[in-house]
Length: 175
Image (cartoon, rainbow, N blue to C red; front, side):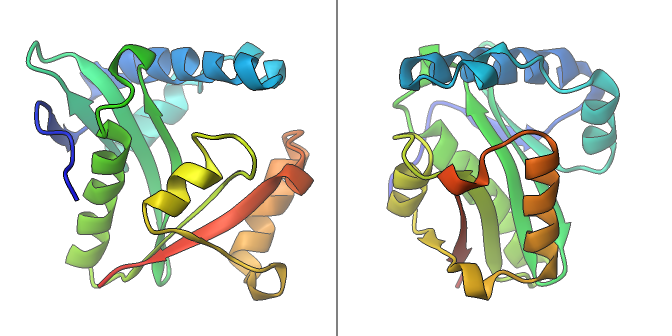
């Protein structure tokens, strides 16, 4: 599988925090096209939260030739897996496989810690969500197969106002 080759990938540093928030907000604007204006209208992540994730080394950024951040992936190590919390790429850089390469960065970090599974939660019908992740090797997790950690994640989504009937948990086994 060919990934983005004109970009470098590295752990985010504190100097990347504002760019990460800008990328998240800009990427959220795509949801207007599928009638999900609530996501588009949402403010970016709190700066303090971004700094905590950077300090924990849980954000990888994609950087272009000008050393500008053009995308990021945020993840959370969990027992037996890494949970992919968010992947965002600037719309000006869409279609260059940056998102796929960012997911691969998380996969490599997981494997380096002998963790052999990635999971995530995403919208079922949004083209750049579940259909995209299926192309990257993720598959749906059946409701009956959700463990306590994912059930708690679902409850947190509901508390934030997400419609979980339109979402799916997915997993990708790593070899």
